[in-house]
Amino acid sequence: MNQACYAMMVTKLGGPEVMQYAAMAMPIPKSNEVLVAQTAIGVNFVDIYLRAGQSHAHNPEPPFITGVHAVGIVQAIGSDVSEVKMGDRVTYTNAGVGTYCSHVAVASDRLVLVPSNISDERCAAGFVRAMTAQYLLKQMRPLIAGDKVLIHAAAGGTGQVLVQWAKRLGLEVFATAGSDEKIAFVKSLGADHLINYRTHDFAAEVKKITQGKGVKVVFESVGKDTFMGSLDCLEPKGLAINFGTASGQVENFALQTLHAKSLWICRPTLRTYIADKNDMQAMAIDAFEILGDPSFRLDIEAVLPLKEAAKAHTMIEGRGTKGAIVLIP
Ligand SMILES: NC(=O)c1ccc[n+]([C@@H]2O[C@H](COP(=O)([O-])OP(=O)(O)OC[C@H]3O[C@@H](n4cnc5c(N)ncnc54)[C@H](OP(=O)(O)O)[C@@H]3O)[C@@H](O)[C@H]2O)c1
Image 1 (cartoon, helix red, strand yellow):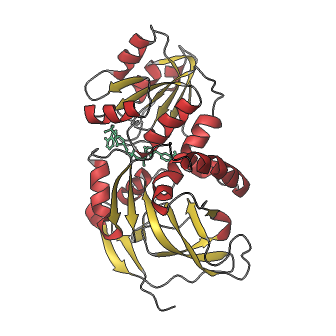
Image 2 (image 1 turned 180 degrees about the vertical axis):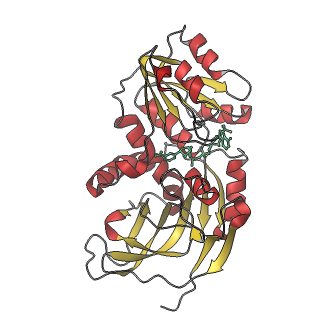
C-alpha cells in the first residue's frame, strides 16, 4: 500500500505541546481486523486525560497515539472478518487503539456502520457523546417525564447532547455552564433552569428553585470542583453520576457523607457499557436516531487539521469551547 500514514504522537506525558506530528508505518490488519482510512476524528476530554497521564483505567506509556474515536472508510480486510466490507463507512470507539492518525487497524467487532444521513463530521462530534448520553439517561436510573435532573458543563460536547435528549424525555433540566455566553447557548438548547457555576453557588440555586427538595439525578462530569455541591442539591435517595473529572479527581471522599440522605453515587464509563458488541450495536441504533434528526443540535466549535490537535486541546482545557471539536487527518 503506497500511501502516506501519519499520526499525532504523545511523546511524553504533559501539556498539549507534547503531541508531535510524525510519519508512521501503514498498519497491517490481523485476521480479525480491518484497516480504516480515517476521515474525521472526534476530540473528547478523555484524550486530554490520556495525554496528561490522568486516565483512570490505565494510561499508556509514551510514545503513544491519543484519542478514542474516529470515523472512516474500510480500506483492507482481515481474512476472518465478516461484519463489514471494503468501502463501508464505519465508526468505532474505545477499541484499544489511538485515533489521532490517518489510518488504523481495528478489530472488526468494534465497528459500527454509519447511517448515510449522518456526515463524517457530525458522527465525529456526536457519536461518543450520544452513546454516553444513552447509557446515562436510559440505563442507570429509571427517569420519567417531570423528573428533575442537573447537568453540569451543559454547553460542552457531551452536555449539549445530554440537555437535548433529557428534554426529549420530558425531564426538568437544571444546567450549569462556566460563562454567560455558554449559559445563553444552553438556554437555546431548551434547558429549564440555567446557572453560571463560576459566578453562583449552583447547589444553593438548585435548592432555592426546588424549594429545598433538590433533584433526582446529577450528571456530574466536572469532578473535584462540583462533586460535593452536587451531593448537596440531591433529593433524598438521589443519585450522583460522576462520569468525568474535567476539574480534577474527587479525592478523600468519606462514604459516610451519603448517610444523611441515603444518597447513591457511581463512577461509570462508556467502555463498560459497550464491552459487549451486541449492547454496543443496540445503543448505536438509539444514538444514531438522535444524531440523524436534523432538529437535534450538535454544534461544532471548530474543525481543525489533525496537525492542530494541540490547539484543540488548548481550547478545551481553556474552557473556551461550546459544543465539540473535530480533527481532519
Ligand atoms: N465516563 C464516560 O463514559 C464518559 C464518556 C464521555 C465523556 N465523559 C466525560 O464527560 C465530560 C465532557 O466531555 P467532553 O469531551 O464532551 O468535553 P466538554 O464538555 O466539551 O469539555 C469539558 C467542559 O468541562 C467544563 N469544565 C469545568 N471545569 C473545568 C476545568 N477545570 N478544566 C476544563 N474544563 C472544565 C468546561 O465547561 P464550562 O466552562 O462550562 O465549565 C468544559 O467545556 C468529561 O468530563 C469527560 O471525561 C465521560
